[in-house]
Length: 253
Length: 249
Image 1 (cartoon, chains in turn yellow, green):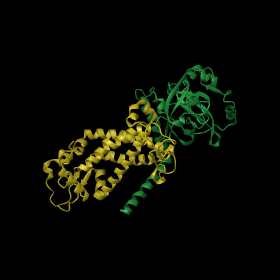
Image 2: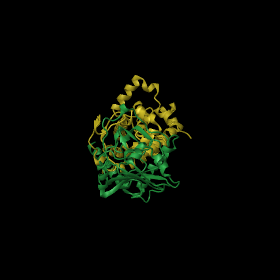
Image 3: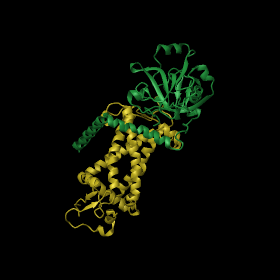
Image 4: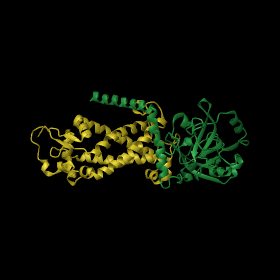
């Protein structure tokens, strides 16, 4: 199977496109697209049901134990109904949603990682190169970003360094962290693989890490959606459905 | 941007309301509920998942104060009478699919070989407290009664009455019933179990969440099916609110 991405990255494809109808490039592999949309639904349900579970005891602690009489490092008001699943108070209902989609999230990430090694998505798209990290390049990327120019006109399909760091941080950092800290909350798993809970310094620490990781993922989603809107939501969403993306006109070209 | 944002928020709230509607359908509940069995299967499939011991702690790691939760007392005249006599006439009944039904006094439970363990109590709400529990192994009592081969579950009938005068009850399977840390605790933190924590005895089933740890246990019944007991789901909270029967996650 030919990966069109490889062609796009080949030097001969780098010649600036003459002014003509916008060219379309194959931007997102099938595995990426399937996982993206399954995950979009999954993360949405996990955060909503997780906030409802949090509402049952909206305090966070460090260490092995932590309850009403112990010192909480964070006490929050309960999250409102519009942010929770279900919208009325139901710890049992929220747990059904959360523990079902936890399986989708965990095994979905595993499947996506496997597929992305096989189709070389990780190697070709997310690898940070020495050139990416050159100070001049970093500065240029930052300037382009601040000017809301998100695509390198010479290689428009490539992720820039900020995208690479963000996506890699999410895939290999935040998502595994939120899954493992969630697993560490299970008394059955704690008996079976106690090193996992130890890794976080106790069950209540794992619960705090779980919440912090959720907050960072929520932050990612806000930035991600904002940038999709700024970059042209119709083209961006279309490419994540069909895989094909029309390169936007660069005004200064 | 404001309109876009409010659109997103409205859309989000609509999606959440949609989740409510979807969540109420019996088919969805059946699908979501299947995760309980899946988690149990996955945990028990791990090599040590059936026999693994729950984490135990040192005395200096215990919670300074262990909160009471669930029923603070059992609100029946019979229980009040037992409490007034310090449970001297109380008997634990062991019935159902056993060769020799038993009636065991608190003194007899206290004279059996004991296990003491400092473990973490994890409430389904999210908090944890570490305390010391002591009592005889449930497995010893089941052996004394001669559990029949047809028995699949152990049911714990409790003295506390919940809303609508419904008795609290819980159940576990034989993997947990014969687990070495599953005890009938009559002592907590080196003192007789207080009424708030479930006197005279409380089940400790350490690898599951707090609601499985039945308080005020009056009787143990061995059964082959949970379907004919109360709401049929194996426990008061399982029947009443749809909590998972397997409380290991």
